[in-house]
Length: 256
Image (cartoon, rainbow, N blue to C red; front, side, top):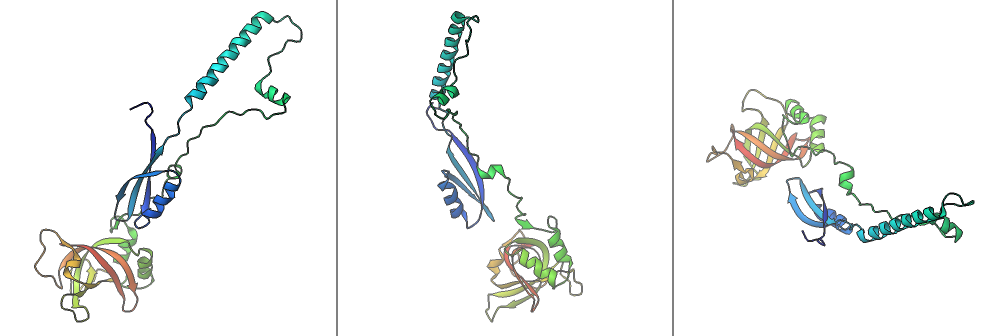
């Protein structure tokens, strides 16, 4: 690397999707340069850099040379003056000279490298990108609980926009408002059964086309309908107390 090539300090900032421009403007105003963006599903990592402050080696060298010269002068004065002369004293310091001239004493220059705020305080741990019964006790309780009520409404309100994933089955599939290719699909938790309920709300995918389900896997059938068992991954929308439907926006559907 050339001797005069700039050296950089770097930092990574996590920004919520859609708010990247505000984060970039904030750090660029502080002297940081955006060099890379790494978008994720919920957050975007922003990589910044800025030149490190240069160390004033020339000033340090001059100051060091002056200090060496001062020691030489003091040594010579001590050799010729000896300890016998009455009233002999050490040469005045810079502070004493400044006081004699009624001037403030010089202070050493301080060089402090500013650390990015993201390094001084660790960010709180982000929730999992996808909630499952394995990593979310709240989702496990929702799926084992009642079909409606305060607990269901509270989960929907607290997790609006969050992606959840669970094993379910298509319990009902009706056309939406008379359309022939758009449907309201009812999803229940667990395996399909006409007599047994595994608990949890009545999830609904409302006003969706089959292509909106984003079907994946090696066993995707030609048609879908009541009784099909799926692994559903969807975004939480809201809970409607009347008629007691928990609305989801499908992200990915895999047949089991």
